[in-house]
Length: 329
Image (cartoon, rainbow, N blue to C red; front, top):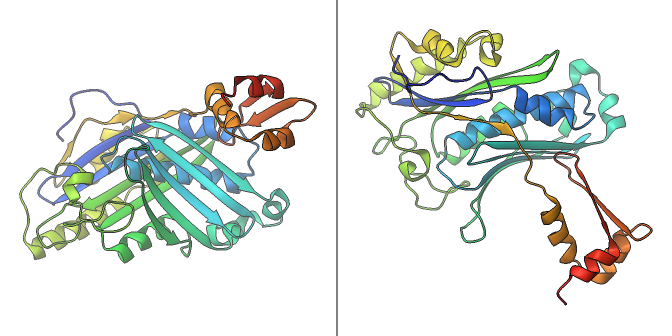
């Protein structure tokens, strides 16, 4: 197996790879400390914590296939007990997430029936790439009509015809918190083939696959050869066991070797992931300063303004007087 030339962590890491001669690239992503730190900030019921962990590893996996500078967000909006889940990943590898839910409604669902459809009651899943105020924001949306998040994402790619992709995912609770692992395979663009031209979805209209999906190596395969290679790669990926995906007993390179060594697998430089919120006292203060006097007065309690970050649960306190004094109007 070709390597990137350095030792990689067993988790909280994104590992890009390519299966030699198959016209297939992939990403292997694991989170452990990232998921545990995010979930620990809130008193989430186990079904919600499980789904949020799944959401975070999927967001990191999808973000890893794109070339962008900014924030990739995966958001599920439900109509049931679980109203909202959000996970986002910056191009620097900072991950955060949170969920909004009706605690009584979640508790009323038996654990064995706490599936995505039962918890959300339907809704939609949105993918967003935000590269700042000076770049266009791209978004794709698909209904939450699958048995799990992976099925919903598969459905999105099938209906958008952007590219062929396959996923294998596992989530595990352990003594220290939560961990998850995911493999995503994507068929490399070929002239006239699947994924050759990206149109619609969250990507720019008319953008070529290599503009957003990175540079590919290897020779193009003919149609029959490429189809056989793709099917074989998906079958090999599906053979990964849940405890192998989540780690940490089996290293990232060891897992890729076990799955794909017969065909040859090449790894490229990856990057670490971290649990990191982007909130700050300065950001909160700027938002408060942008509100009109009447809105600030409505928010104030005995002259105090208290703002709690939905992602990390950090609390920021200001007095109404100091916010008004800092305004420029």
